[in-house]
Image (cartoon, protein in one colour):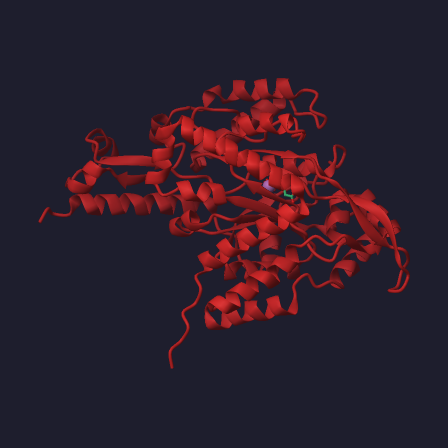
Length: 466
Ligand code: OOG
Ligand code: NI
């Protein structure tokens, strides 16, 4: 008997990310407009800068850019999070990093499900920022119980999706036909449901406790709340948005504009006010009444080089310095002053690739040049090998998220007065217990990619010429 080969998790992820993008374009037309703008800007950047194009092509990173997206969902229970981990594993996505947002006044903690390993990332780097609501941060006990029972009563996964997750786990993969079915079933979990599962009265109470709580608890599923394309020039997109009648948030989150982009810069446009139906009363046969809910928004991002722990510590310090001088106001009134403070603080962060690499601030992989491919050398010294033209260094793209930026994105689309004071209470252990697995450490992962590239180059160069 011949066994059917399994569809690769990378291929399932690519199918899923394309299906999600098509669904979201149908649901939120402004997302389609944003995709067009980003494609135009990326095209212009690459035409104006043939060196950057050649470099992205040489490191096999050109194709992924136009395909690249991240999304976000907010879950209500530990059981949802644990099943979500298994769902994402079918498509080669694993939880990386822990983000505590309570400190920033948002009652969630989160991880990002994403592919790990260089080959998988090059194939399709689709990621989903996944938050878990922290009901323990709701002060009103009655409301907390009501929210918990609403969440306990829903199942956000279709029976077919659950069955295929189990099949993939039991067999170690899915055949092409099952994989296609899995994508269709999994997509249902992320779909928008214009019918709430609560009355307007209950929605109002949840909303008053925190807008985010209403968003998570009032619906049948964790609708995807944004899908973010990657741009090569976020400043150009930011000004292009305004020109097309899309109002972006006032400040770009993350580091300021630089010659060598680091980490992640992000901006978003505000959530749409959408018509929803609320239950007119308790029970099934009571009919519906109309209302509105704001949840879904648009975001764009520009990704730069990943930082080492030393570089990240410097980033965190300079960001705090800038924010201590000027805290960006929710209404954008001090956006100019904030951006100036940010630029000022970041003068202390080297802005050329050689310094970033030599100072151990950012990650760069090693690659053989054409000359290196034909040569041999016993040297292990990166500077000497580069000076001889045998190797080149390519920036490692930052694949993760930033907690302060994420808080800014949450805040801008939850509404300007959504921030509340929760006691900062990071609880990675609790999160991992709910997830059913530890989250991966992002720094270990970047380091491994760099070490593997170095080993491969040195092995190739020291091979005796036949
Ligand atoms: C997630 C906000 C965080 C990002 O890119 O940092 C985020 C949410 O609003 O659910 O998407
Ligand atoms: Ni996002």
